[in-house]
Length: 191
Image 1 (cartoon, rainbow, N blue to C red):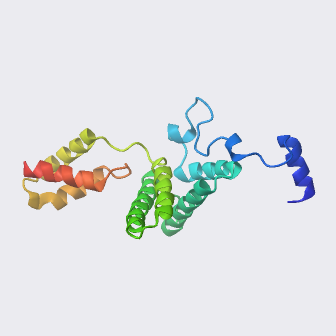
Image 2 (spheres, rainbow, N blue to C red):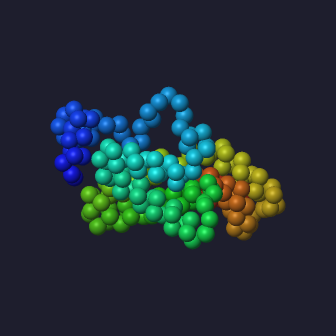
Image 3 (spheres, rainbow, N blue to C red):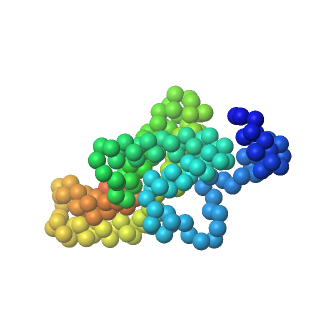
């Protein structure tokens, strides 16, 4: 860093050097009582990630910065693959896929005894889950399954594939756990 920049930083911060990370706000902290653009639904996940990257850089938060850069890269790659900007549902699918990858990695690292990597992956899962809207409740899943069963006319477990396809299409773009939906469909068709 040039001497001029060091001098400016010293003047601005008044402490003659870098600001300790603890003195800076957390990368995902809310800085005002007003809802953010993301919370109001007017900001894409990619724009939110870019804003959080800036905050993490200012806070010298390397683990958060690494995870956010990985997410940005995945979103950008998907945009390039599609040849257009991603819709919100598509962005959520990318985030969900990354969470699933991290959970699979956690299992493998636990089997290999790599607790350091388990902790890193768990941190990334928490950060990525923070990018998703709240998951659907069990009641909302049950309602969607009931509508799909009625729509498809399913009566037995043999119709599970058609019901699952209908439910997943109806819930596209929403953060849902495929296992929870699968179990709800099984319960509905079994009894």
